Length: 251
Image 1 (tube, rainbow, N blue to C red):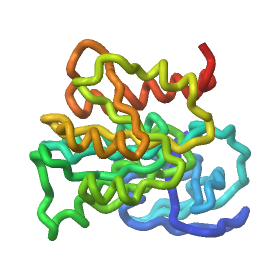
Image 2: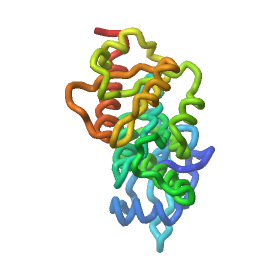
Image 3: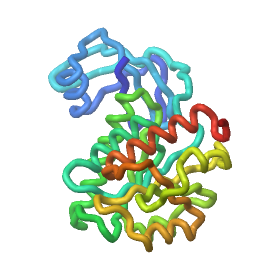
Image 4: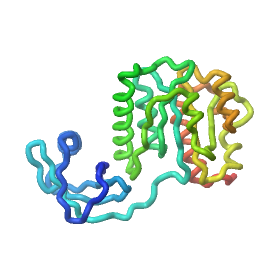
């Protein structure tokens, strides 16, 4: 069943909700839903409701709230915060979409020394709003009850200074040849948040990796091949899914 997120604090059973025009286009023109079809609504406090399309007017859609559902928790046991270097073309869009599908909790776009695509200051806010919409769409598609927050663009230095206390930091680095992902998870607590730093097209330079290490971060190898930035992000999110779901510390 299709789901959408609504920016409302409270929903009541039996309530009639009028949807905005952009939602009308998505549900009726894109998904081809019609009167009598059911959808799921997720409110601001992560409750999931079943709703019935009661009336489809001229660019107006009315939903009747039917029942509050009890859904299985599909979120990862540890919060993953992705610090993704902004990439050229639409590769940042791809990372945000796929990382959301793979359970990322927060997304922090960052600028590094080797960043190629640096949005102009007057466009960065609109870019972040666009990325937030991509994350919302990916959450709806993948059946999550949480939409990852996409933060404002910042430098890698500022992002390191703002790291949450107790965060477990990982940075894939092509010059690391001793430490792999599996080995570090043998000593990792399931409940600790995980900060993942992904470099730009040219990778992090040594000083940036050293700054992450100086804060207790660990540089890791992703294997013998050098991966594109967007591939590295998706690959690492997939590995973290496996390690977290099977149980950290298990051999």
